Amino acid sequence: MFLFNRKSIVKITGALSLLFLVGCTNSQKSSLNSDANKVKNDVNNISSKTYINGPKKNQKNNSAQNVVLADIRTYAIQGKVINSDYTIKNTNITSVQKMLGKPDSSTWIASAKGLYSTYSKHNIVFGSNKGGQIFEIRSLDPKLNKISLSMVKSNFGTPKYDVKTGGRETIGYTAGDQFKILFVFPEPTKSNPDPLMTNYSVLYPAGTVNSMANDRGRQW
Image (cartoon, rainbow, N blue to C red):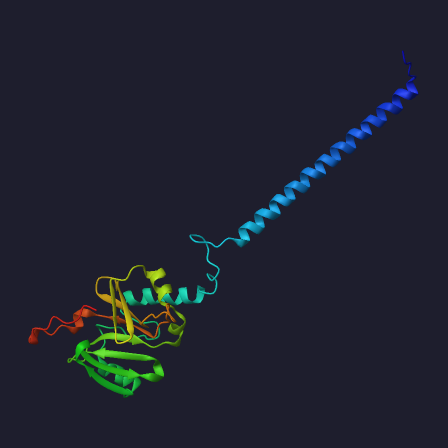
């Protein structure tokens, strides 16, 4: 039988306590290291993922274009384009000429049902019928040249109108009950599958109707 005095018992108890604390500390360190490595791996995995339904890498880069597209939608419902205070339906080409002067060019386009007056300095083209009523305003604003076909479809959805002709693709959407929006792009190709916009216009189809000639006018 072994006999321990009180001093020996105290020493042994202290040693055991120290071993226990060291063991717990090592265990905690190991656990913390394991958790830290797991978090680090999770972060790396998230960073390496390509978002499909979530945020896109170029979302910030497209923010300016998204603002322009939002303005296009807002003004179109009012019968306007983004870089002009003139309103289709209620404006006559004569009043435009009084304010802006003689256009750079005026061309009658039979297929479009009107006279198209270009003001290059103002990046604007007005389409007017035989009575002088403006039924279409086309914007040539340089900001449009940074907006791609996919951006428009992403913002406006599937177009109501989509025609490819003469090396161009024109897509259209309704804007309220009376007006329509037409976006024009170079026709997509293998080398340029997502072309940038060249111009867009707001159209008032009823302004192209010629009842005297039994002409139902344009829809797009």
